[in-house]
Image (cartoon, rainbow, N blue to C red; front, side):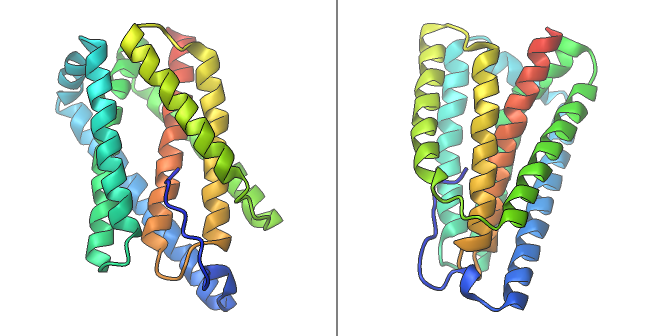
Length: 236
């Protein structure tokens, strides 16, 4: 979920139907491109053997994961600002591209670990299918009900800081958050997907399809992360 929340007069919901449809198509085309680029980057990184190197770098110490998380948060914040800015389209695309690369880097150790635990990359496909099914269901709810789920924003912000605090505490003090935390985070990420999809329908301004795509990509990536962790815990 992107912290950017483009609530202002002149939202896409106030535009003619053909403009609303064009905006939604553009957003999902950009989202599809971001997901495809992420998958391609991960495939290249894993096949190059860099996954083992990344796992050794961050897995040798709990502070390795802490540094990776900190760096990702900084890059994620910068990318979100760039994509959501009113600057040139090139700047917005730069933000989206930067975020996709950052996600690919932070996912690399986890994906490598998943393959090592199960002995097969099939677990990545299984996590992808489950994530896709959840996203499809949530998207269907948002588009069929046309309900404004902006009320979820406050709860998601509070949940984000609570989850971040628990993650930081687990890294600093060396305790495991366990399966239940992953299950709760799947619910949290699902709420973020629903919230972002609702904003896509009701809240974004015309021309902000890149920002909308980045926000959805972020929430889907978070959902995929914890779906994968749940599958790993069942196989471990």
